[in-house]
Image 1 (cartoon, rainbow, N blue to C red):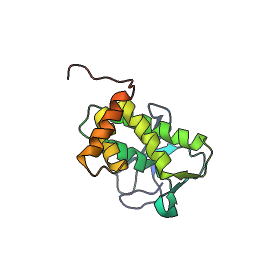
Image 2 (cartoon, rainbow, N blue to C red):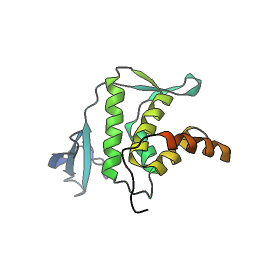
Image 3 (tube, rainbow, N blue to C red):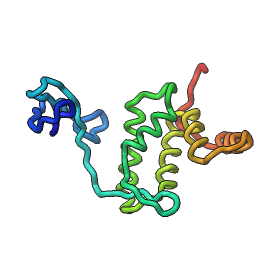
Image 4 (cartoon, helix red, strand yellow):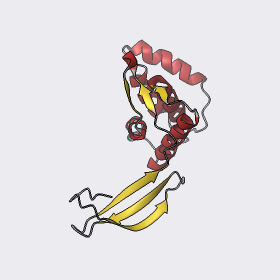
Length: 159
């Protein structure tokens, strides 16, 4: 593994352990050239996936985009980073197990929406406002009407 600080090719693994949900191996590494330490994650990738964007554009699937979009939607919300990580891993596993090499971006958005509604309804609404391209206050009202109909597994108390 190349050192991100000095680009030295000879780094050493000092510690390896699985992540909490056993979806990756976390490795602490050390560079003998510059004495810096850094962390890498090793994940299983079952297949190469491509995202079909609007206008038939294609781009490689990026797990980090799923994670970051969820993280942005849940910013300053009472959801732990580990919960977001676990939900993102579950979305990736579902997409990989579907067996499709090309996945419409709308499908990925729907998986993220399903995960967010279980984690935090405010984060769900934030994500939906961008994903569904709300332009008018009426768009929010209609969406909130639908949200009241959805069952959730997580309810906040004492708010």
